[in-house]
Image 1 (tube, rainbow, N blue to C red):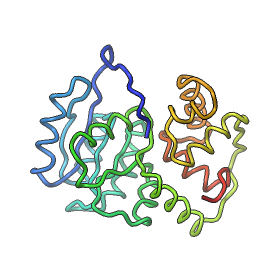
Image 2 (cartoon, rainbow, N blue to C red; image 1 turned 60 degrees about the horizontal axis):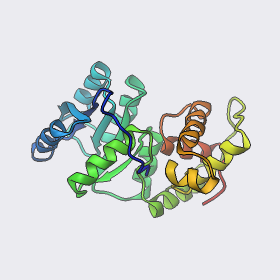
Image 3 (cartoon, one colour; image 1 turned 30 degrees about the horizontal axis):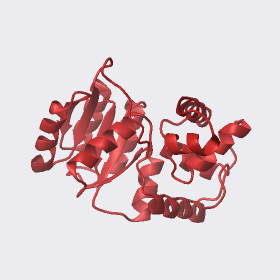
Image 4 (cartoon, rainbow, N blue to C red; image 1 turned 180 degrees about the vertical axis):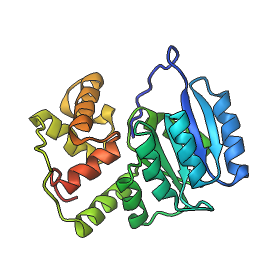
Length: 227
């Protein structure tokens, strides 16, 4: 996760769409978001079709998506949300830690995962981390996820040549270990700003919008070694 604090005082608040059919979870969270200086609740959806429509209309910065929804699978909905609002960071709310569920979510473009029992303060931290492009996957879970992807999905060549610089490969390799931008910068002896620049270029070259997407895509293209 990227733990480096960033000032958002002069920018618009992060707009969060909550997708969960349990009012006892969604409504209190919406209220707490409204109390944050750097966040606001863009809306609450209780169904997948409603979430996709709201994402297309509202273009939220972050979407908190429950896996189990009344009308469809939340991971399939996450994929649709990314289609209609590519820049939205999708965080999957789940009570499950099965690696196949994580693999499906990563393939759908999710930026990370939040266990349903996560403390409120940690949910707010996760939203801020996702907003800034960070990865929300615990280290052991990331290792298991990449191992699963490698076991079921042989590396395939890119349809176009992916030309990363040696430094970008260094950054990507550390991203594959679950490192955040601050830790990567410290490991490579560069500034965090420079590191973020490399991460942004990696995202652009791979055609992704988050560190998790970058790592999963790089694994599938054979750009990262086996975990």
